[in-house]
Image (tube, rainbow, N blue to C red; front, top):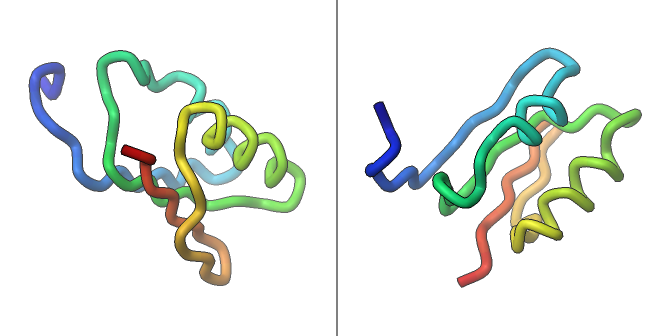
Length: 72
C-alpha cells in the first residue's frame, strides 16, 4: 500500500524485536525521513550500527526511544 508513497516518520516498537523489524524493511523502496525505534541494551549497538550504515544518524534520545534522521 505504501510502495509509491513518501514516509516522513516511521515508529517501530516491536517489544524486543525492533532490530528484526528494521532489518525486514527494504531501504531501497522505503526511505523514511525519521525513524523512531525502541532500543534495549542488548540490541543497542546492532541497531545504531545498522542505521548508520543506512545513512541515518541519531538526533534524539529518550528514556526508551531514539529518533534517527536520514542524511540527505
